[in-house]
Length: 263
Image 1 (cartoon, one colour):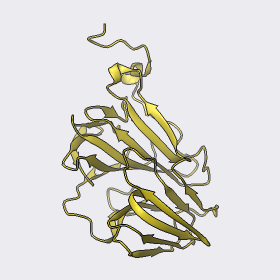
Image 2 (cartoon, helix red, strand yellow):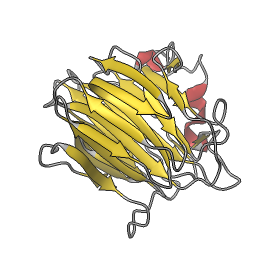
Image 3 (cartoon, one colour):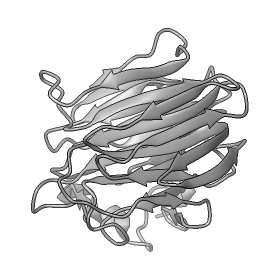
């Protein structure tokens, strides 16, 4: 399912999907926070929250901590992300115009230590490298998951999808609901998002909701770099730790797989 963003985001919090939405419940609140220079946003609620800076310069304040964070290019720079448990107040002040922050929230009764993940904390991997004629080479950035935040009900990361190439490939699925939020460079770019047997055209600021164990491979149009934030909601007693590949396509995982016209 694709949620199209037809209009420009307004200053403040722009909700995209919410916990309990009929027929599209990802168990997460998800939206985009836009702050003009000098604008302040305060947030304190009974949910686990992740504030991922997509672009701009802001000051994060929480539990007596004050940190200035800057990101100019989401393609070339690793992310910063503030991860907060329920009940902790966060204050965000924009130091530049049109700072953009991806906000994800979910219920979590665990009380854990707040953490600001820096650009150096991110796990960066080049998926698909050296296989399939480099047609699915992409950069996967994992900010936190079960390996470094087993107390979280969220998993947060990013993908840089090179022009004309595939990501989330070979086709895979998992029972945990997931959200993709897209950016393109240049902004008039586009790509295609698979949702099981359905395929959708996606553009800048669109969002995909991935539910019901559907496969979700992606491809960017030639000439346009596609970037997307991905967030997953861990299920009770079943956190995300595995991509389940469709059996008929698992042979593509072999680094020595021979494909036409290589055969």
